[in-house]
Amino acid sequence: MDLILPSSGLIFWQLFGFLALLFILIKFAWKPMLAAIEERETSIDNALKAAETARNEMANLKAENEKLLAEARLERDIILKKAQDTSVKMIDDAKEEAVKAGALMIENAKAVIETEKKAALADVKNQVAVLSLDITGKLLRKNLSDDESQKNLVDGFIKELKLN
Image (cartoon, rainbow, N blue to C red; front, top):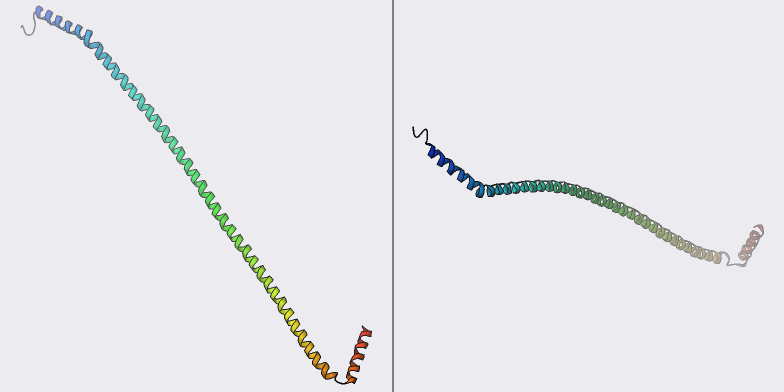
């Protein structure tokens, strides 16, 4: 029965050894272990706080990136709209310039045609006058070759002058 019920001396020495070991552990090991555990706990808390801060910063950066991306898209749309408006304006200006240039060319062509027409009419009038003078000269030479016909012509001119 010695194994089931130990003797009181054995219990005393086991209790004394346990208490001595407990005292040594409390005196020398317990405080450093608690300090290490607290330090570990503090570092874990700090790491969790840093992770939370980093998560918040990442969320803020993501939101800021989304905002910048939206602003960039808006600016891109504005630039594209301006470019499209500018191209439409340039095309309209080019069309207007072409219409003006065409109208000016037509006007210049009309002026040249009018000038050429006037020059041609003046040339025709000059030729008609020269031909008329030639024909009149020939007729007068033929009709006024005698004195009687010259006298009749002068009398006819005088009568016309008095009537007018």
